[in-house]
Image (tube, rainbow, N blue to C red):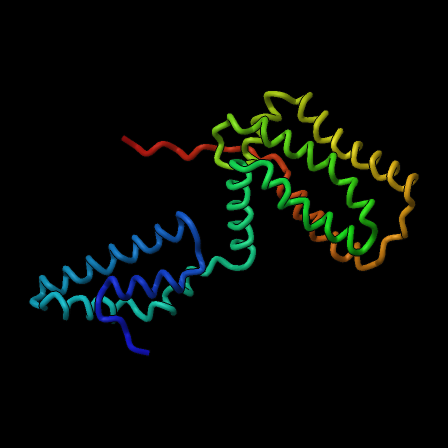
Length: 217
């Protein structure tokens, strides 16, 4: 593979190879740029022209793909990053976020059990949307952070909403089953629901927000 011969070309390949996202990705690229520029400047101070100094800096830094692999956060860290990204998006879009969260579970139940049972998710969805709208005026950077703050300020409303949503869902299910009946669930349903329930527990668990420490003056 041909090695890039300019710092910016190197950084483009380095950024594409990084398995990071958001602020951390930009920070790593900026740090790599600073390191390369410092190495180039040292080369120029030693008598190299700009192009030769950049090539020497890049050669010393190493292959961009190999260097980027050192910053691989691992599977769990990447999953955590994606959960946080969804969390921030859901805080701004409570209706769409609640729909995106509950839709896979409702579709699995409709396909592997009964569409009538899936309808029992409607009151749960409505409660999720209502809670999300209560959090819109808050300033914490994420749904779970905002949920923690709202829970501390309105504990009764939090308990009523979270418990009431589940109770309404169960009541709706029994009403629909009484009216239309429903078959027994298949074993595959439990296999599919297990990770979805775990993910739902993670996505809806209040998380205390601790603001970053202010930089020293």
